[in-house]
Amino acid sequence: MDKRELLSQIVRDNIINPSGRVFYYPNIPAKVNKKLIAYFDSNIKANNIAVFFDTSIFSTCGYGLILTLTGLYYSDTFVKPHYINYKDIQLITVTPDNNGRTYTKSAKMDICLSNGTTFSIGYGDFMKDNLRDILNLICQEHTLWDDIISGSPSGKVSS
Image (cartoon, rainbow, N blue to C red; front, side, top):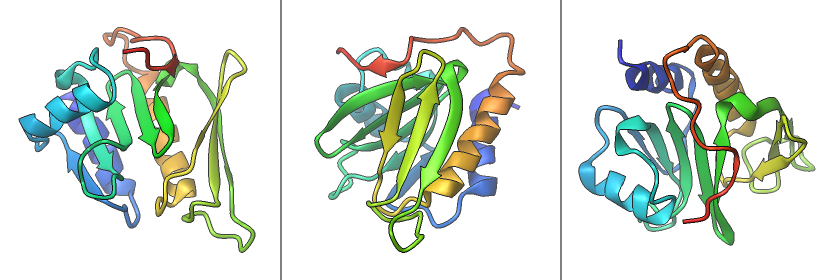
């Protein structure tokens, strides 16, 4: 099985109530890939994209979460695109909102990296504990791949 198909399948098998549009490899339209490259990072290789969660208000592909073979990209309103390499992820924690819910904008998911940096993801209706579990599964799978080049270092996208 193609690794993009494997990542897509991990997400499909484990996602609960995704918000917005979700595109899974191999059904990501070429025009969506072009928008992702334009909005997120001009260096994204379209043939590495496995899943895209479009969280933009008008489905413009301007915000969301991209899962690639080497890591994830995320962008949100007032948040410039960031890239997180799977190999850099040390710990993912979820803090529910004041009512104990993990799917609101007030709930927060923090991704702690090996260099001490922490990235927070606060997408609207994502169930952040579900997303944490999916990312943990992907990170486990990624460690088994010895034929994947490690990708860029984690951080703010500079393109």
